[in-house]
Length: 489
Picture 1 (tube, rainbow, N blue to C red):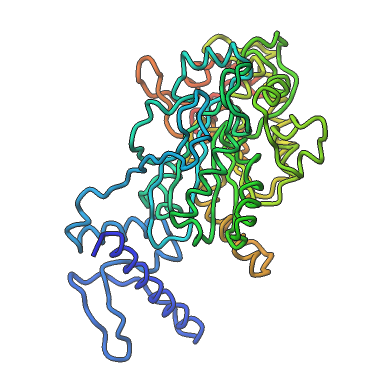
Picture 2: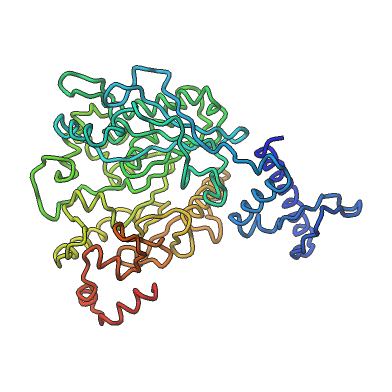
């Protein structure tokens, strides 16, 4: 018996136990009170022959995070082999179709960790900016070659966040089949062109995704119930561009029953006016709209058909979340940071410790308002002010893993024609505090040079914000604002 089989067996017992609890309540019986765990397994009389284990089954309904930790710990204590290091790594696979490549012609591929018995699959698209002409692609190849070539990819990767196989870190997706696709196409996952003398590079991001899906159908995806296409930054934009094409591909290959969904993290960019206009020489200085206009020609990009029809001749619109989202048929959960570093960078706002000018701060505030307005009609949303997030950050008491679980439940209920959202399970959450990292649940930030922890005030000052001036602009007494920030209010 393997450790994973043991955990599956325990989960089956939990399901049986929770059914007994539900039946008791249905019959009018009292809710079971928490019991002290006996030192060894015991059995009840013949009226109820369910075996009792040292596990609090009420946690199934009340706190799934703690419950999954208990399951893991129990499995390790009951079965010695499970206490040994389990193989958590994702292993490298190159595409069967060798004509679909990275920028430099090396084979494209993916990392995968199977979870036998699970019908849930997660495909994650890596992010990492882009290049849009021969000169800045050459520069990218010199400085960030791993984002354009597979020549030095390691044989294994260990997943973190939503790719983590640990239930305490990833309570609702830890046992899914995990797939990570490295970003080596530099085209925001949109290209469909082979290497030419003119471009000097191949741009095949959209084709890489399609070929990965085809390969996975021979590895168990054909039996999937749910496929979550997720990604961050350029990968998040890639989700918006590819979630419907993936659903259409699976349907065309005879798998219409697989529910395809999207999770776009930090990929919702605006085609707004820069704080200070500059010539379009490189990725950093070029305005978002101009960079994409140049890129889609250079990359030979394809965009979702419904979005293409909505923006004929101006397909670049499909790279911006608020323009492509209304055309997407598949369910998509959007995670976005109010002070997204990539958005601020292309808008020529560089928070590097130099004092933030009043005009810059006003621009940042207006950018937040504009961003918020474009997200108001997104039904499944988590909008954050933290620099980093996964399991610890909460908005109105709800973490990202919890919000994703609620979204998953709401989609299941909708499929059963139950339109009412689950009680106490929100899926549209917007952080209310107006400054970077001011949510008290944001993780600790450390000074990259000294390694010292920074509180909110130190962090804002490190970024160049004048806290006194910020208070004046908000019509507040500076001492009151400092007190609020110090207390995490």
